[in-house]
Image 1 (cartoon, rainbow, N blue to C red):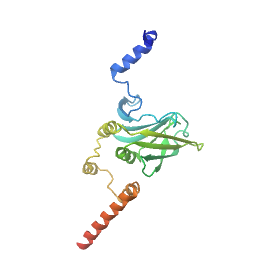
Image 2 (cartoon, helix red, strand yellow):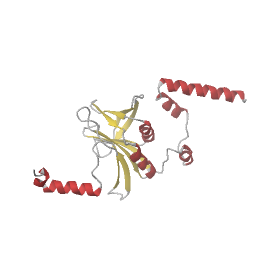
Image 3 (cartoon, rainbow, N blue to C red):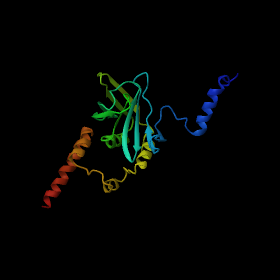
Length: 219
């Protein structure tokens, strides 16, 4: 029996070229890539997520980007989100944790791609603590809701490569603080605390109570 690829030599040649160059990525996998900005001629890197199941969700892809030593989280869709340079509502949920609402902004040259720099570190931290999925939801300017459940399997390594490109080491909080990152404050505590399950919140409060009692006793 003849292979069907023999009737399509151009297709066979393309597959062979992609495979030999290492660019034949798994469809449902996170991938690390590097590209060059044609305008600035600077290299940047990003970790790209797999797409959600198309029979259940919209085409939504996340990207963790390091460009000019700045972290950014992008969202790419096939649907219109908002006019160029406009803010829109975005929310995400890691596994069964509490959903996190925030705002993203479309790029100046796109109505289908959005990004955030202000919330990038928080999103990345949450993804790296996740085990199964990140469920994302986008509300467009016409109030249409786009959603998708994206697998977190295999996300850690490519994302950590991007963090290394931006010289960020999450495994060493002291290094980040010495590098000038914002100190851990009450707002950051409240955000993290609200994402914990009720039982873990109780444990944290018990530890705080114990610590406060010890500190008051040293006065």
